[in-house]
Amino acid sequence: MASEELKSLKSRRSYVKGSVTRFGAYLKKLADKINIIGVENRYNIVKALFQQYYEIQVKISDIDISELNNEEISEFEDLYSSLGSQADAIMKSKRGNSKIKVDFDSQNIPA
Image 1: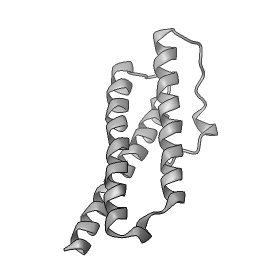
Image 2: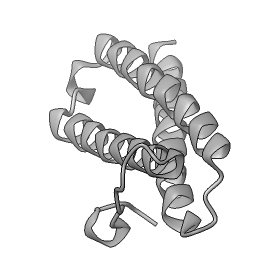
Image 3: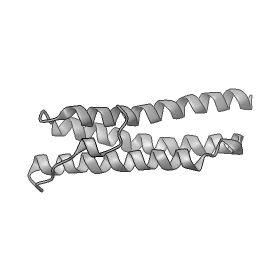
């Protein structure tokens, strides 16, 4: 039973991580065609996914403590933080609140 639940949780975790990575790809391909509402909507989804990731990770670690990989968790946090900063910069610059240029090439975002 626990192995089936662990497998299911790992699958859900992979989906969440993939969704966050796809958000990064979405931001990267926007270029000059920025739809501010689209960025806001997707960023709100990613915020919820970040919380889900932690809930899933805690459940996985409760079942199998060897699944607690601090390096992997840290990499995911870094990716989320980087994407959140970029989304915020895009939204602020598009609203005219700030003159911020987002340099996607300097970010380590999986394609």
